[in-house]
Length: 170
Image (cartoon, rainbow, N blue to C red; front, side, top):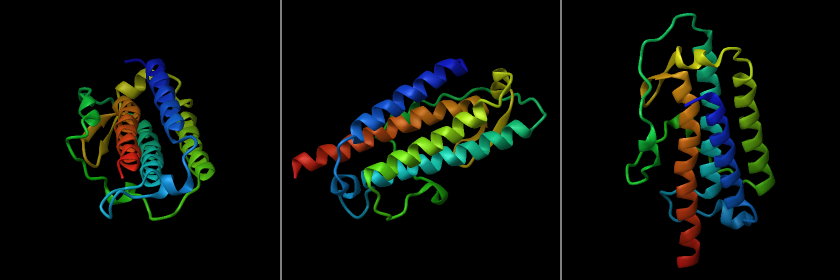
């Protein structure tokens, strides 16, 4: 998958996310189904933190001058919500109550950081030749880091839809 295609997927996925949370009230954004679940706001916080952490990882990976000889990894498992994944503490959300405009501003800011670092890459093929160690998935090519962002966001869009659906059940 080329970087141009990944950019398109990132854009489409973000537009879908923004469309889903658009018009939700403060209560809807910050309501938890139960004490073990995240609110929609917390899911968005997690997406923001993850994207910012990925920017750091990609930046560090780009500083390497050594070519990496690892293979791309299949990441589609990220879309399977039946397989629970525990977020690392560093990517977990806080209990901060956020309003819609603040969520949008933070989502836009984290995406701007991602695009800023990707736009510094003169030769996009370097993303397929450099790697950085992921805390959960281990050795990952930088292109997989970027690709996993939209898949990760799609996973959490499903979660947000589950949370929204729970409002109408109760």
